Image 1 (cartoon, rainbow, N blue to C red):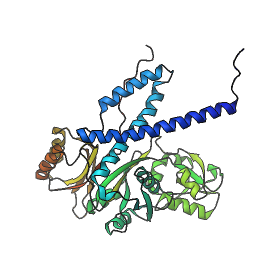
Image 2 (image 1 turned 180 degrees about the horizontal axis):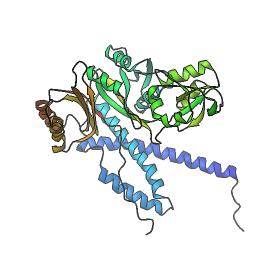
Image 3 (image 1 turned 90 degrees about the vertical axis):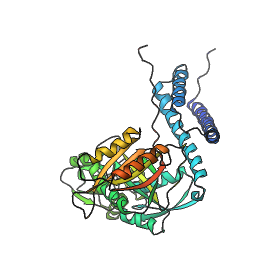
Image 4 (image 1 turned 30 degrees about the vertical axis):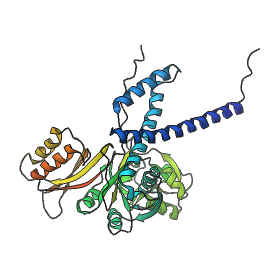
Length: 394
């Protein structure tokens, strides 16, 4: 007699049971990640072992195929799990290196109020550290910096670049003069939406409120709306607040769908950015630098001014290349008050405490007119380990 098929409710019950089992196993794996970190400290082994990660992923892909699981599906799951494990180990080492920074509550300044992208980034960054926030909304990047400099905030969050609109020059200009140190970073996926009061037809919109950066990042979609009035706001939160206050069917704001709900707004068009892969990189600044364990993947950011002689910048960059130091960012900004003189901002994948980075900084000091380290901090961008997938034709 054939088995009686399960009802939909029975299937859903079984799926819920499996989901609960998966969560239990993931929690256990997280606890083991801390044990891994403790062992790596004892033997002074770096947090990331990409050869080990590659071997593990290849075996998981092979084991998954025996269960008819697609290789890309397996990799997408375990890339996320490995990233989480690396960040957990990293936080454990950072807590040991910086015991005075382990606070249950942190005062954090950022651009805009509730619902701004800086607000979302602040919540995500500090939730990873299990730190409660005292949110301090600011009207400008200058105010974010000053709030930390004066001691009214413990940390400030600043966006520095976007994959669609590029570098945020105003922030780089603030970094040129501040005494603060960069102590962390975060890359946040940006999901721009068209937000209105109620379900409006986009063709009826004649006024659009947004911060200049989202305006720029969504310029192609904005052009499809025709000749509309563009109102630039101090933050995304300010744009959403103004649209909510106006309560009119012909006005809209650019913002995140979840943030729009805070202001009673509805997303009538999603994914309106020029690029589908739209990310903003934020930095976290504080009055004191952090110590970064040599076992932790780290970045160092510094600024330098070279002489006006031909090849001066190239000579400085060769210092990094000769030592195998990977540069991830090079940005130039004019030096205020000194016409035609530029300050260069450099991000490298290196720990300032390492011998190779110290050697590079020593040589750069002799080659430049001015050099200042803005910070050395744990890298929160965990690049997935590449794995060669089996040929589907085999």
